[in-house]
Length: 305
Image (tube, rainbow, N blue to C red):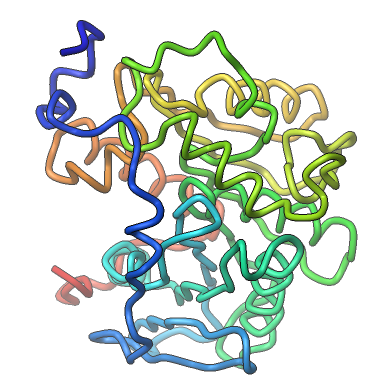
């Protein structure tokens, strides 16, 4: 058993595996059906979104596009239902979780373009304030959100007011490191990381495009303001801190939530832990501030509670 010290609130850490069986996990993906208190919208043959809307008291409303994690190779948008309900219920904003295509069947740039399709759809909805849209995601979803912010900057059609990057998967070069103690990792190993990056990059594995791995992107000037959070026991800790430093050097407002002894996905696996609650509250506060949103009117019950 590892002697690595995890955050004392995270009591499951010592029982969790260092990585996940991607082969097994890839066999399971939720069938698309409308979420409770929300709607399922198919944008085209490849992209769908799970949408949660507050009561129509003040429209157009700010919005959040959320992107699920899973190393670019597993997972689905149903994973985000609880978080999206919470954001909608507490802040009164429209939230949409995108169902994007997965690698290796659909390597870069397909998943990123799917997310951009969802962002354009959201910005064109009549009840959405296109000047108050945030984007975000966790793990690979955070990596896609970072790439989406860069793509939005390049194309100049939509200007997100915030990118929320929760322990984002940003840099394929981490997969080649040999100096990381595997005993400090939970839920995402170097073996997982190498397989996932190779699957996502596909034919681009030898010379990754900058938009495929945002950690490689040269000029971060003008990208959306950023909230980024990561635990010190996360495989992505170093690459995430390096991205924060580069954002700040480029003049991008960037808030860092560094969680001592937290492993990858800790807030999803142990959502009731005090450290996880505080982590989510930090994200919620950043969204409230950036979107100009606020708690719902007195007497409204937050969705999902």
